[in-house]
Image (cartoon, rainbow, N blue to C red; front, side):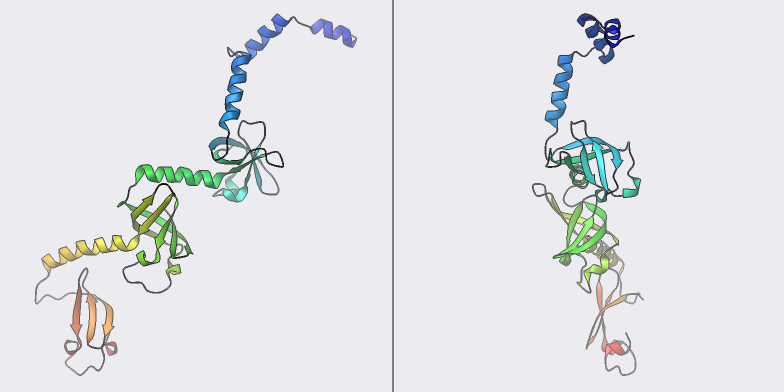
Length: 258
C-alpha cells in the first residue's frame, strides 16, 4: 500500500484526535497541562531545594539528575556522603545553584541541600543550652569543626577546662557539648564542651561536699604539682596535699613521689 493510501487509512478527524488524546492524558485538559508545566518551570529557581531522580553516573564523576525540567541537572559525585551508593533511580534532594549555564544543564548541589535540611532539623529540635553529640571533623582557625548534623564551631577555649596540648588530637573523636549560641541569620552554631564539664563538676562537687568528712580516706587524681605540694582532684573538688604531709621522710620536691 502506497504512503498516501496509508495516511488516508489511518487519518482521523480533529474531534477523534481530541477524544483519544483526552483519554490518554486522563481528565486534564491541554490548558491545564500547560499550566502545570509552566508551574514546574517557574518553581525551579536558584537557591531552591528540589527533588530529583538520578539518571546515571558519568565516567568523569558527574551525577546526572532529572528534576522535571527541560534540562538535566549535574552534581559532582563527591557531594554524596557515600559515592559508591549512588545508583540510577535514587531519589534525592538538591539545591539549584544555576539554571541554563554555558553548557546547557542545571548546576545542582547535594551537599548544600543536606546542610540546609540539617540546619532546619537542628533549629526545630534544639535550642541554646541543649546538650548535643558530634564528631570532631577538623581543626580550623580558633578551634574545631564538629558535625552534629550540621558543622558547628567549638572554640579552642571551650574544648576543655584546662587548655593543654594540641586541640587537633580531638579530630576523629565523638564528643558531647553544650549549645551556647545559635545565629539563625548566619546559620552558625557555637558549642562548648568546657561548659558541660563544668556543670558536671558542679553536680559532683555538691554531692561530694555532702559526703566529705574529716578522717575519710579518698582516692584522687594529681592535677598540678607545685614546690609546696600537689593539688588532687577528689571528684569535683581539688584538695591540697602539702609536701610536709607526703611522707614521714624528707621530700625535696613533690615530683619525687607523684
